[in-house]
Length: 583
Image (cartoon, rainbow, N blue to C red; front, side, top):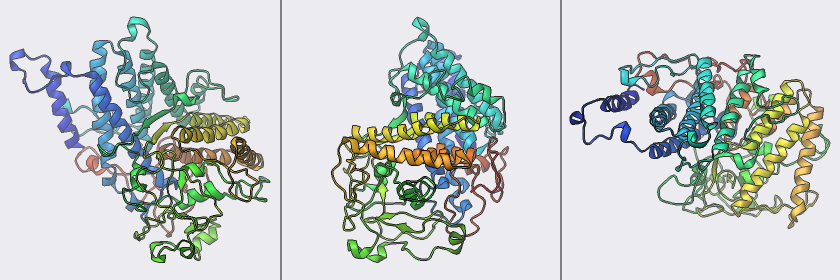
């Protein structure tokens, strides 16, 4: 951390003083702050923000069993040095540059630039707290004054600062006419649309107050200024329309590297059947064959598939039985067998792999990687820009490996905040306020499914669903999808009615909707404890689950004011009130 602040602090110190020096003393090779291009800086901040979000959500995704944690112990999977890039990207890539941008844009009267920089800074501070709890804020960017050892601020104070930034941004966005300043011409998120930035600003504040309300009852009054706790009605502009979704969009270019969605690059290699990495078998099972949602709603009848799975995942094989597909059995790192005793004792519903053709890894499986590229289940069209799974679940012989160019060729998104997330927040607030959240929950589920379908359709990667009652995979008509959605939402409604803890059903559905955004799933799980009874690690005694991450090595090793938190203790974020044994 010292090196990070020193590098950029010296630059800022020079730039800050260059403006007051006599012109003859200015370095002709150094561009002063006053000469910087605010649109260029904004572009850098927005790109760094996308990287920061991608790193944050990907880091915690294994903790909520959406991707696989490939170490047997949590402390091995989450060593301090693994978070260095995330930490540096936040402070050096976003907050430092955004501070410079705010100063420049304020001087020029560019209110949209100021507002956007403050919104992205606020999101960054909120996320740093959500991941690490107490973090530097007051002294974080004070290297220009010679302080290279910033201390941490209490997490709640950092949250309050972020909320204040959102309020300041809202003030800037409320300005009209000449007071509104010039247009934001290099905006990769909203194309300079001030109304959409305002909706995001309000939504992020609502999100923050929902977390804070666990430890401060006064936050409920703040929440009630954004939404009606009983009806879910939006009282201000928030992201409740798909047109307002806050996403980073990837392209399809091979050069420069990183133009495609990272999951696409991982699972769609230039070489056929050379996919890498593992999705969580547990998450795939919950999407495909969750016994919690059945035709009678109480555990009997027929299990209901979540229609989103065909967009989320792509099976390269129709069966994990090597005989059916002709692949080498040694390519399977995991074959069905007797589950570990603690799985059996806990009533874990699945172990290893499952038919038809789903192949990932169990939680905390740190075993080696066999030559299983042609077999692993790959990321699908949403949000990775891959291909949807169009093959019948009855086709055991099916085998079609992935290759670059498949599907949407990587033109995926980072789903930073989607309108269905807001719908789920409305349902959660209603349930926690002792109101009936059933209708709000079903609306959220339906909107989530529909938004994912629309994304795939827009990419030319539509799924043609067969009628739900069909025993064979036949070409369905337009109404088949509606029947499927209705069947699924009806099952969710029955499960909600039967549930003793309503938030358990609502939380599971919110969790399912956050595929591609592990950060919101991580926050949800710590906030509500839902979904409960997730798959445990494959090995006993994995160490405490990471309620927050250890401080990065660049912070604790290079900063005399920093102290690492114990790795063998449960360390909660300030708003987490769930029991210590949450895992």
